[in-house]
Image (tube, rainbow, N blue to C red; front, side, top):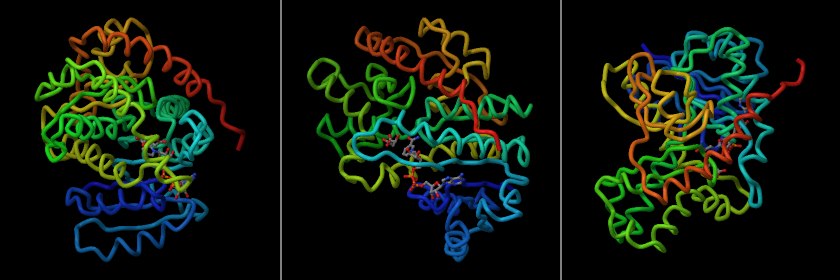
Length: 333
Ligand code: NAD
Ligand code: LMR
């Protein structure tokens, strides 16, 4: 019996993500929460013949806390998306929404696994961590910043650059750092299978790194004011959520993914700080999932000179974004 909650379930990401979660038979209860239309989306999804029983809650309902009660996992694509000309940092207005949601989770589902999609992820994950610390419910092994869309893009764009776009799902490229521009650090030197045709051609390599770092901007520009990535994010979001569900509730062992996490979650975080030459509190790293969530934090491993330069830039940009999230002061209720 697994209860999943989607916060921001009526939105561009929330609707397809909720649909995809409804199709996962591990989920037996699916609560949709939003400030608008959650009840309608829930009614719609509830007609699909799969195990999950779907309920919808508006934040304004007196019994809205019920959405969270008994939740095992909460996935959060709530908040404003970008328009052309905006950076993710311009979305820091979402910090207030994240803080409110964190308080509802702390009150009603203090043991839930929490997956944060809302931007700017580099800052919103620290906002969740701080709110949980204040509530006395913080378990860093259960808090994940969802940077998985960068990993999906890395495979897709690498296959395209190599001239084999149909083989996108055969390429695996770790992406570490953060989720915004220069903080997104694709480790092309660790690609499986190896991609020497890109690594040995500086122009192609720079272009591929740039496309992965600024893939979000491609969609924002193409949507021309109508939002940012929603469908690819829903797919990436459910892929990541399903990995967590499989590890925690499905008994699957040894799955390694990348996620933007608190480096204090597990002893391996100290090793990362040495590798990146900084004591940043949050970073997207290789993690092994298990029943407790983050089972192990694994080393970044060997990177080449080009990646060392990108790492330096990523660390520099990430510091202030983390600080902004940590020091966020919510408006008094
Ligand atoms: P959207 O505007 O289509 O949907 C957001 C939803 O959140 C809306 O339905 C809105 O009503 C709801 N919402 C607002 N305040 C809320 C609250 N207090 N409680 C519950 N729900 C609330 O936006 P979208 O395109 O779905 O994007 C959502 C967020 O995800 C944005 O911040 C966007 O930047 C981010 N995003 C992150 C990634 C990533 O890789 N992590 C990728 C794409 C988008
Ligand atoms: C993305 O990478 O697509 C998201 O972070 C949304 C955005 O603003 O680009």
